[in-house]
Image 1 (cartoon, rainbow, N blue to C red):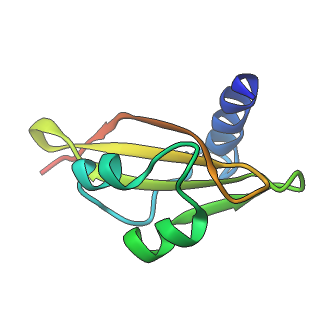
Image 2: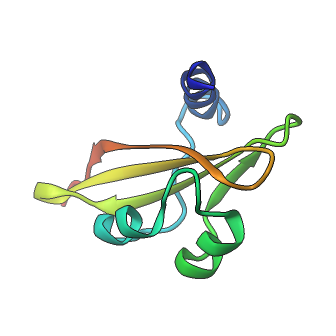
Length: 102
């Protein structure tokens, strides 16, 4: 299943042509970290706790959700959640992705 994460992230970057797909909801990182538990959190639990986000569904039943979070020095971070076909979180990835210009 590890091999699936990188192709999914590459697909997300390519989905919108020349610009990467952006997360639709800004949530504090600590909230994401405390709420999302790989292996036990479900789509329904996270939708109730965090609200809707940018979501991509695949024919395989897997689904990817993306949230953004404020990071240090005005940067934005991106939090990517991979759900398996059973609706349970399989993997999460996070990192600073862009600088907000003032």
